[in-house]
Image (cartoon, rainbow, N blue to C red):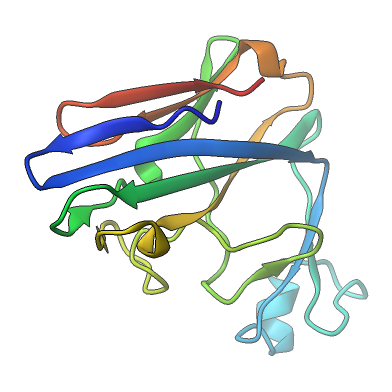
Amino acid sequence: MRVPVAFGSGDMTGAATVTRYIVKPTYTWTSPSWRSAREQAAHAPPNEVQYGYNTETPARGNTFLFVYFRVENTGTTAIVAPSPNQVVVSGDGKTYSYRPVADSGVVIDGITGTQYDYQLGKGGTGGYVQPGAGNAAEGYLIYEVPADIVPDRAFVLANLDYKTSAQWKLA
């Protein structure tokens, strides 16, 4: 896991890394923008909505996998960051796409950091990372996977640019 994969060319180069992962059977989240009862009710049954906290529950037999992804610009010119859609989890012959959180202000109980944000807080399908380690785009991506997925046989796959693919084994 933690081995960076280089991509790009010339003065537009970067390195992507999966730094760690966490498995959670459910998770509770809140967001400052989700204040209305209607917004909360869309994510929690009646009588379970309290103070803006919402619980996400996977389908029966599944669990949530939080994968921490980091992209650093190692060149001297801004680079295009890989979109979360370009990062999937593969295990037992199946591929799983990420599940985005409601908005960039979401805080998940027990999870550090924020969702991997490819437009630095603005959302969208692309973005730029400026040179330097302090400007890295990093955070978690959430996947709903089978609860019996085996980390030794599961991988994070990413298309980092038009010619570079990466693969990290979870365990």
